Image (cartoon, rainbow, N blue to C red; front, side):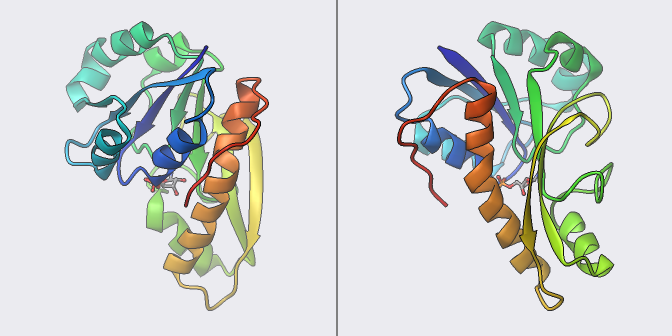
Length: 197
Ligand code: GRF
């Protein structure tokens, strides 16, 4: 049995997509979804999907070993950051070497680092005049968006695409490729995956 723990800070559409993808896979358990936002929509999704949704605050994450200890009890094969906005504390990164991955909504090393999240990324891409953007799935280390790259996927953008349109294109890539990459990392060959948008 492969065990996944997810982290998210907001809507959690990627979380839902990943949960649905693995729904009929008997060898995968989504042990829990952890969030740093008490009112994040992802908690509502967890409720509907009937999976554990847990909230933690800054103190539990950075000052105490509370989140680390909870993670250890879940004994995850993979920790997946899917729209999680806080930097992972060093002690967590060191406790799960090679087991924490993140998705970034652009083609790293461009448009990464502190402050580069959500719409800020898409705005920066638009302002740059780039003709393509994409997603980067990478391992997590102690610095934002700097771990080794696992996979990148690209999509063309037009100069008149709004940031909302760019976000939509990026989300489509995420829904298609993030669960598949997770399955691959876990060494699973998925027969008939369910995905949703
Ligand atoms: C995604 O675009 C992800 O790449 C970024 O945050 C967004 C999260 O979206 N890091 P959602 O919460 O999964 O809808």
